[in-house]
Length: 221
Image (cartoon, rainbow, N blue to C red; front, side):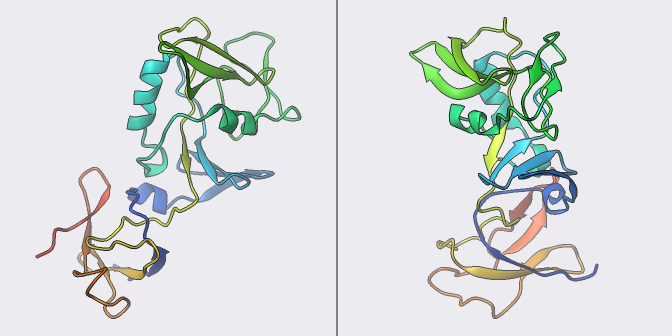
């Protein structure tokens, strides 16, 4: 296997090989679509799923959907806030809704919503939750178990500190710089001499691909 080197500020976010191999597919102004099912908003540094979940879903299940979502190989997806959803709305962009006849979604075509009603993470009292409407840029709330409005979920995550590798064992500071390479046996190891062993890095970690494609640190020997 040819050796490769990545210089990264280690963040502790676990991602799979799918995300590290993502290629740019299309652009629309500030939005960049990748071939791993993600869309990056370069204005906010938020990464979005390139489509909604595809069916009506209550808010209680929308949270679980985001928690278990693995789009692009990432594991830190969540429900968006109202402000984050509002930030996507663009009156100049339009495409027809699949579920509401005559209605138009106002959003970049790189992110496809089958319906214009999208859950937010924000709640109303004990049993209510807010959703955003991409037809007219309004926000409303309903019961968290309500499924009468064709409500959908659109996962989002922060892309501000993506670097493609988990935090090595024993490394406390996110500012440490490490170089990585692929060994001939497929195990990713730190290059010797690029950081000082001791306070922040008592061991030089080795990385391996898990059966689910997630890269994990081997336990210290």
